[in-house]
Length: 206
Image 1 (cartoon, rainbow, N blue to C red):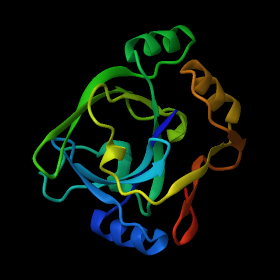
Image 2: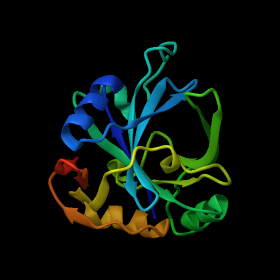
Image 3: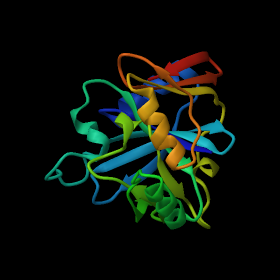
Image 4: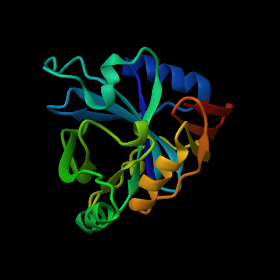
């Protein structure tokens, strides 16, 4: 179900060094999201899931608006959202809308790989951003392309993933509409919480 977690950082090189120090594993550079102003690195979490380190890409022209997930406005690294595996995206979107929640339109996305190749996939895109303060995932379908975990650095494992929100019932309703399971606990501040086992021990991302 979990495809990947999106961990927004201000500077990708700094984040790579930090992750390597904390986990003993260095994430693999993934490439650029051309035209979106971002680039990323990926770290395998087992079970065909990964964490994506997403950062502003200084080699691309400065964006005329905010970057995805507001990553250019964050004052510290943060789990900003996540993606859930799904097939038949248009049918899933239609079913969710009938249930009273709009997960957004299905759009094509691509990423330029370090070797020059192009990775293409589809996902649901919602304006102005992910629902439920980022706790409700976007749906993603990689089609026939190799999943990013085939290129991601192994060695870590996701052992727990949960959410916190002051209106947990509302978040749960949206999750039910897209047929996605995620434990949601009551808490004063919205947050995604991932506990990861690594060669250097357990780390927690929020």
